[in-house]
Length: 221
Image 1 (cartoon, one colour):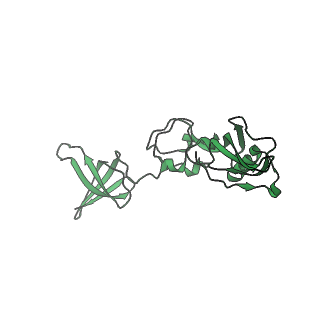
Image 2 (cartoon, one colour):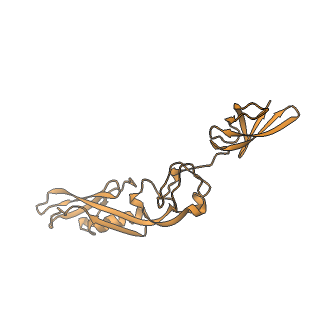
Image 3 (cartoon, one colour):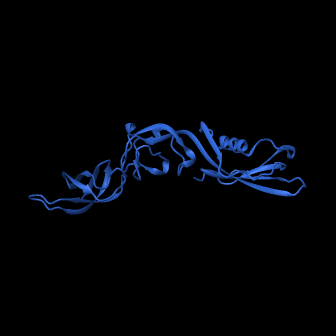
C-alpha cells in the first residue's frame, strides 16, 4: 500500500545518527502517529560495509515492503549508496466488520467494531470511528474482519434500486397512493423509473416519477 513519499534526512555533521531501522521507524512514527506498534524486519542480508560513513538515509514509497537507501562514503572517500529492504507492519486501531456484508448493505453499529489492524497492509487508510460508517452503504462486499475505508462507503440514496417505494399520483384534485419498485437509485428531486406489476382492474408496467422524500415518489398529471 502506498502511504507517502518521505524525503531524505541529512545527518548533522555527516555522522551516523542512528541505524537505518531506527531512522525508518522514526519516520514511520512521524507520518502515522495513530499506529501503536511497528514491526520492522530486514528482508535481505545487509550489504552495507562496516567502514561506510553514513551521510543520510532516504526512503521512497512506504508500504509492507520498503526500500531504504543509505548514502555515504567508503573508507577511501568514494560516494556510495547501499540498498536495504525491509518488511514493515504497523498496528493501530481500525474499523472492521463483525460479519460478512454484501454490497449495498447499510452499516449499523453492531456490524462494525474497532480492532488492531496492520495499516501498512491495507489498500487505503482504515476508518477509526464507527460514527463515520454507521448509516452509510457499502459499495463492495466485505468479509468478516475486513477493514473499512471511506472509499468503500457511499451515502444511502432516498430511493434505492429494487426497493418498494410509495407513489403519490396527483391529477387535479384527485390524489392516489400506490406502491412500485424503483429501477435505479435516485436522490430527492431526481427522476426515477418505476415498475408496477399488473393487478386486477389496473394496468402495470414502467413509468417515471420524481423523488419527493426517502422512499416516496411523486407523479403530477
